[in-house]
View 1: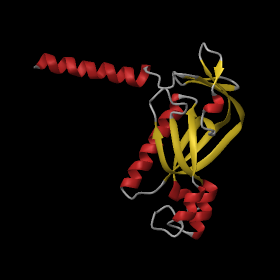
View 2: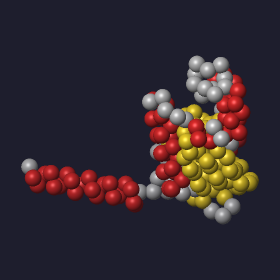
View 3: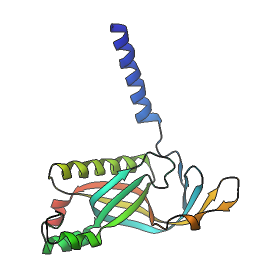
Length: 192
């Protein structure tokens, strides 16, 4: 029994080391000086940068997709901080479903299709989603996230080896490359 416990502990240690330090969850994404390429399995999506992106959002939902066939591994549903401050001034409880301000806020919430430029940004985004979910379950404060990166423009979605561009067959969406992300307690910002 002791040998089995030692073997299991060693296996868990090795797997944890591999999972944390060696495995690259973004190995299908290539970020270069002026472009981003995503290997989405059946096709390669190429983006160019169209400008800098820097915005803070109040998180209303989000998801991390470990499936490498997804173009964007992170999806967030968020309300721009400027809109959140305006809503807070009029309806301090606007983020609660029972609030009279909730329907107004829902109209301003936007979906963000995010492609992390590095594992640090991915980890922070995952932690922000987890914190937002945890706070929602426990009736805690909303979580905001400050994002910085580049706005992306899809140039092509090519099927490898077939010289076929299926970009026009994909659902039109806006994508952003996130170079840095920082979680912030929304209450602190809204009350300023």
